[in-house]
Image 1 (cartoon, rainbow, N blue to C red):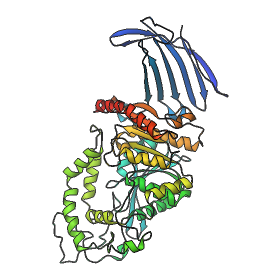
Image 2 (image 1 turned 90 degrees about the vertical axis):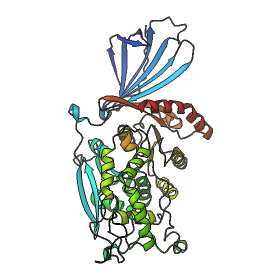
Image 3 (image 1 turned 120 degrees about the vertical axis):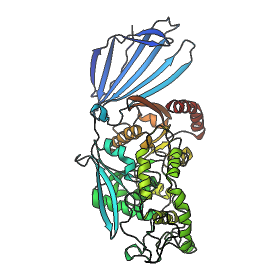
Image 4 (image 1 turned 45 degrees about the vertical axis):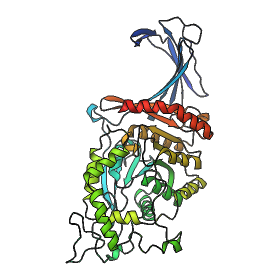
Length: 511
């Protein structure tokens, strides 16, 4: 006789039903698993299943061996299709194995009639001659939260297409191109060449390589301070309400910077492999004396030596083969289709202002606030922060994510493997699932648990989950580790070593 157990909370509805027997095979040998009945407790739109199964087909040596305990949680309501299955099994030898699997939906699949929401491409003039490009989706979701995505260096709003189409079904979603990048490059030459002027390299665009700057670009420099101001204007004047801001790489740094300077405009910040620093030259406001040592810091016109250096570098950087090599480096799963990302980046490099904009970005001064200072300010102002990092990132390695977690220990930290520098594009199913759950946790003021967590006490522990989702007619899996808040350094190291082989095996299987 199967043993049934369940736990119900106050105001929960208990439902009884019967299940039929199920045949399943394991290791070429059939074993029969019977489900006589089950009980469900429903509370707050979440259904809880709890049962113990007795496997038939061999004789157990005691009451524990030969049995399996399976706990299932099915998140209903807005979590339709999210099934969490947790198995704890003990074999005859007495060795205990833990295997946890979470089944989550894939992206909208047009082949079976599903469709993501449509994406609108827009422009908005911020300052004279400075037009910002952005994309939006789900604007008809009146009353839902606004989610703003900020891109990494060298890409644009197109890098968040998978978030716009999917999350736009639930939220009002926006993605912004930073000035000097994506489709927010200038429409006019900031420093035109004279009629008789020519570039030293005929393969490079000429915009920005003249000796005199147009009045509208006299103080233009594509810096973190400019982007922070751009985001503030966009949220205030275009969106008009506080937002959840999500940033990848450079976008993560700008997201934190914006939140630190404008906490009243931010409901929460999610960092996707955020770069922990940006800029090499000192900030003129923060370090005025030191900044004077450097006569040029990203403004127009470009100095002659910078022009020559840019010409040499740009020919290599803008080469399609170099772009493909970089994508191959930062994406851990090489089965990911990056054709659209590749073609869009190539298109950007062909804009006549791209080379000079690149020079301005690389030589711009540091932001007035460092990454560490932005974290401190956000924590002081109680800005919620969530961390979602790809484990196989060759640039922002796990070390940097752990450093952020140490500074903001209360921030949920999800480490995903296999995933590289751009987890939102590599495993969008996982990022979208985690974002939905985290936003609802914040909106509910904590009454709804964080994604993958079952109890509040779980926030103090390291938790491993295998997430499985459909993609292009097959199933795909990744491992997600939740890094707990109250845990010693030694426990973190020991947990990392223990789970590393599991991550490696799954990464090898995915490839």
